[in-house]
Image (tube, rainbow, N blue to C red):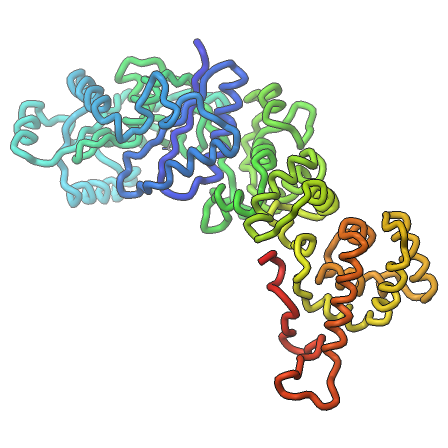
Length: 511
Ligand code: GLU
C-alpha cells in the first residue's frame, strides 16, 4: 500500500512552529516512501476560526518548501480539503454509524452535563459523561428529536476493558476504560467534532500513517474506537515528542515566539529553520547537525527519533541561521535573500558586484537577514553617528586629519596598500591600533561594529572614504564651541553628556 501522510491544521491564528515541525516529518516520510503528503484544513471550530489563517498556513508550507501533493489550493482526488466543505460526507457517515448502533442520541442540557461531571468527580472518576442516554429507546429519541429538542450524537464506546492501540514510537498504549467516555461525534448544530471529522477524513483520504504531536495520544482511543465501529483498518499512529519551552512546558506563544511569520520577518531562512526543527527529536545516523531537506529524506527513520521533550531554543535557531548565512548558502543566494530586507529599508545599490562584496564581508557577522540592514552605511552617505562612534570621533580628530592625508596619497586603493598605510601610520604614532582604527571606523560607518576597517575602505573606495573622513571632520569642527555664537547658529557639542543629538538621518536604517 502506498504511503499517505497528512497534516491537518486548524486555521485559528498565526502559522505555528508546531505545524511546521509536524509538517516536516510528515513530508519527509511521505517523500522517502514515494508516497503522498496531504494538507487538510480542519475548520469545524467556527468560534476560533480566522479567515486569513488558512492562506498564511499554506504560504508557510510553500516558504518552507514542504509543498503538499493535495491541498485546498492544489486540489486532488480526495477533495474538498476543507472540512467546512465536507459536511455532507460527515452526515452520511454519522447516519451509517447511527443505523449500526454505534452512535446514539443524547439530550442532556448543559446544566445536566455539568451535574453529571460533578457527580463523576465526587465518585473519584474522570469527569466526562456517564453514558446514561445509551439506554434511551431509539423510537423515543427519534420522537424527541422530531419535536425539535436539541441533541448530540455520541459514540458508544464498547465496554470490554482497556482501550489498546499501537504507536510506532511507543509500542502498545493502553488507556483504562474508565478514562474513555462516550464522546460527542456530532454537535447539536449538526457539525462534527474534531474526532469524527478527523477519522472520517483520514480514512477517506487514504491516510496510512497518522504522524502528529503527542498531545493527541489522549484522543486516539476515541479514534481507534471509531475505526473499529466503521469496520475500517486502523492507520499506523506515530506520536512525535512535543516541542517544549525552555522551562519544559508545552511550547506556547505566551512564553516564546512561535509564529513562523515572525521568524520570516526577522530574516530566518527556511533551510535553517527546517534543519533546526529536524534536530528536534531526530538525529542523523552519522551525528551531523547540519544537513539539507533532501539529505534528511535520504537518511530518515523513525528509529532515530528520541522521545525526550526537545527544547525549542530561539538562540540555537539563530545560531543555525547564522551558519547558513555564513557557510552553507552560496554568496549569491544570501544576497538574493537579503535584497528584500535592504530594499524595504530604503537601501539602493546600482551594481550587483558591489552588493555581493558588501554581503560577503557582512555575512560572517550577522545572524539573520534583517541584521544586514544595520549596516546601511554601505548604501548611503547620510548615515547617523551613534553615541559610541561620536566619542571615538571626538578623541580621534588628529588621527582622522592625518589619515585623510595619508590615504589620499595612495595610488592603488587595494587591500594590501590600505593595510600597509594604516599599519605604518599607527606605528609612526606609537599608539595602540584601536586608538586609530576606532575613530576611522566611526567616520566611515557611524558605528563601531563593522567589518575590518581595511574591508570598509576597499569596498567603499577611495573617493567615499575621503568624503566620509571629511564629513566627520566637518561635523567635529562645527561641534566646537564658538566664542560668540548667534542663537540660531549655536550647535550642540559633538559629544553631548545626555541624549546626543543626531547628526544626520535616522539610526540604523536606510531611510
Ligand atoms: N486539527 C488538529 C490540529 O489542529 C489535527 C490533529 C491531528 O493531526 O489529528 O492539530
